[in-house]
Amino acid sequence: MAQSKKNYLITLEEYIIRSQNRFNGATGELSQLLRDIGLAAKIVSREVNKAGITNLLGQYGSQNVHGESVKKLDVFADDQIKSALARSGIVSMMISEESNELIRLESSSGKYIVFFDPLDGSSNIDVNVSVGTIFSIYRRKSPRNKSPKESDALQPGDSQAAAGYVLYGSSTMLVYTTGIGVSSFTLDPSIGEFMLSDDDIRIPELHPQYSINEGNASGWPEGVRAYIDHIKKVDAGTMRPYSLRYIGSMVSDLHRTLLLGGIFLYPPNVSNPKGKLRLMYECNPMGYIIEQAGGLAVDGKGRVLEVVPESIHQTAPVYMGSRKNVEELMEFLNGKK
Image 1 (cartoon, rainbow, N blue to C red):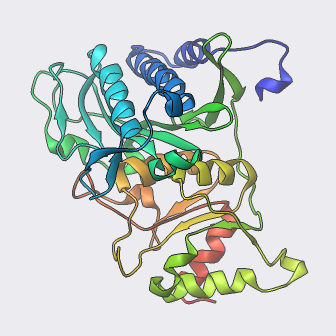
Image 2: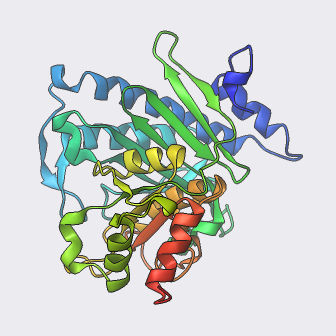
Image 3: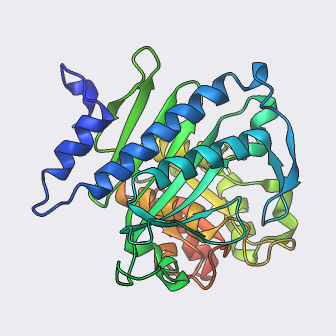
């Protein structure tokens, strides 16, 4: 039931505790981890909102593992999330978009492994466009009395214990799932708390809207080009033409898609034949959320959550959103239309 239907407010912490109590034998470690991420998000949100007056805009002067210029706020967000995750001893290993290697923590007995993109869409920071943080949580497979291995981190998205994102926009929102639906929280800056906005987000089955970078059209697979051409044609009976909405920040584009419906597409192209978005800390967590809300997330061949990763920074093509939108796209990709 959405929070708006209630006559009282629920904080993120209260909601997490209530959810934990629904499971017999729950240790509270995952709950603590989610609260830690919430705290880091508050700190990052504060700095994002005043970046222009605290000299946190602009380039940091280096590149990340993907060859992308690192922004000052990237570094700040990365540091805050690492600090939050390391503090409780629950996490044994972290993987950040900003780090080349796995980060093994002193608390090597920690139960969880966390992937994260500290500031998705950071190329938009200097022009004051919404950015976000994405996180993905896995349970380690090796014994907790031994040092974690890279194989602990290389699990398919279906194995996620939790996933979520924080959107730093006109308001700051935290959206997450632990596999039993999708919940959203809005930060109330007057009291410094995330308050429940909706505890059962459902993506519409169909919506005439799409999100894609059309500047890469010449390098798309034929099925994608045919689908985009199709949804641009006028046909009132099928709500065509669809409207294009593209921000260039995955969190922003998919947050809109989650709430309103439609389809988000990031196909391979000439420059990125294996896709550009990172499987483990972009495609998997966002795909998990979309699926938990009733949508679909595919890589063009099958469910993106079933892809067995080979490396921590692996890339993948991805298409996700409303069920009927994605199903129609797959017909084009499979040559059935």
